Amino acid sequence: MIRFILTCIIVIGFLVLSIPILIGEWILGKWNPRKKEISSLRLIQAVFRFLLRVTGCRVTVLGEEKVPKDTAVLYIGNHRSYFDILLTYSRCPGLTGYVAKKEMLRYPLLAQWMQYLHCLFLDRENIKEGLKTILAAIALIQEGISVFIFPEGTRNDHASELDMLPFHDGSFKIATKIGCPIVPIAMCNTAEIFESHFPRVTPCHVVIEYGDPIYPELLDKEEKKRLGAYTQGIILEMLKKNQALV
Image 1 (spheres, rainbow, N blue to C red):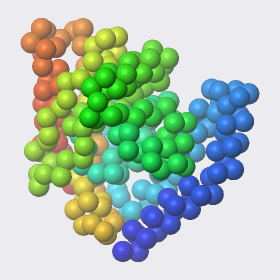
Image 2: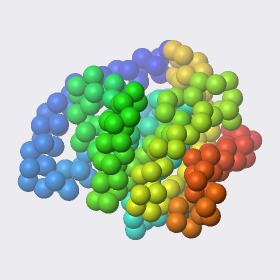
Image 3: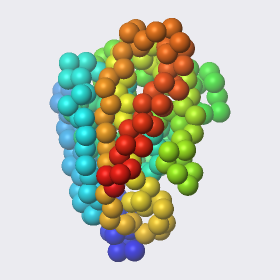
Image 4: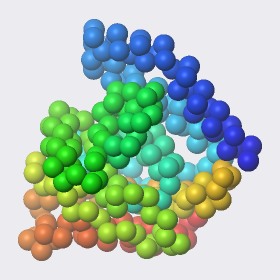
């Protein structure tokens, strides 16, 4: 329980104490928007890395060198834990916005930081609003800002992480509309940090693997038609392989 309490104290403490920083970042953004974006990115990445150290989580990363360095990408990952965001965002090489559920807007300070970091808020019950989110994500990528989405739509709490929820095909329109690379990410054993032992935060070994980028325009007709299932199959194979490492 000590790690759980420490994690809560750090998160709540940071959000409260960061109010002057939020104001400072806002002022910086008026003068130099790009500098503000990078400043916010690096600050939150440092906080996330510190939180992961507090959990005692040991992380093995594979294939990170495959992420394209010269273009924004669409990251696609499986989703088992709240800590999936910390694990992946702390490693993003450049500006990256996450697609989150609109309910996150209920939390004022957290929502403000998410907006600073180009996060998008998805209304899962409203198709029209969902389309607007996809268009906003496309605009971000066109501006050179990568987008990360969990196409299962919610955290998967099945007994086995190999039993993923279906990937929503709408998520992949972000890439097919503009032909940006899709980077599949398989996160193995992340539920062992917290969800499998709720409310305890438990040290464990996590494996993150970045797959080869998928370029939609290079796929054949059938693969492109089933892009969600195709990408999910790649992630599933990485998960199967990496279960032996945890």
